[in-house]
Image (cartoon, rainbow, N blue to C red; front, side, top):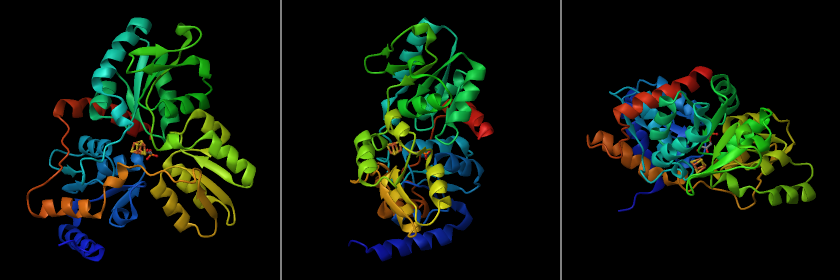
Length: 349
Ligand code: 13P
Ligand code: SF4
């Protein structure tokens, strides 16, 4: 028999009550409302990594995507169990860089640049890639501290390899005054560097990965709005392309977008370039402002949306039944090296 939404919610509520302090449910801002209503903490990926490092709960049921649950497992103790309610909740960007491609790229880049490169990875990456960065003196970054971390990287080495999101890497380096002709792109499929000009002058090597959600916000969307609604403020996530970021009024992490709209005056108008669930939530929370999605068709993250109420209940029931499903366990050696990369970031956050 199919349960009604009310029955599902009641069951989740009852399990949460019974497990009490033993259970912690972090929820990323891109999660569905039906799941977010049960989150003990909501946040962007940095805030959730910090929350995971702090909680003493025995069970962490992570409402987000696979790499976030891996990060929670890396930052929690061996006695804590991390569960991802649906294993199909991956991230297409994280899938664009695997460890074998990364090691192969590293070899080629070392042949060109010797020991002058530091690897940095966006947290939207596999645990193995975080470990690779840790092992090679590098660190992780998130969209809210990318600037600080790239600045730090240049205190360590002459140039950096930024994985796996070329757009966050390019936007951050550009903001720090690095010209576009000092950036090259590493194509992991062709296994080669794409650059123009003098190869020795390249300072930032960008992995050719992207977010399939944020790439859907386009220059055409912005041009259309500027013509039809010139009063609109345009705010986007730095996973959008350089062209889109440069034509927008504001760009920043999920947390920055939320706070900017919260602090904006009543009656102002905003077009937001980020994931659909968050845009809808911001619209509901600010009836005093005119808010739309920069792309009128809205852009859902399909994998974030795989975590739904039935999967959350299923994960919680598996705890009570003593038969835990979808446990996320990062191997010990990877955990150790990935911790080194994550801790450098958390120390700067
Ligand atoms: P933040 O949570 O760091 O803003 O990242 C956005 C994102 O795409 C998460 O998958
Ligand atoms: Fe990955 Fe983009 Fe979805 Fe975030 S929004 S989980 S980066 S695909």
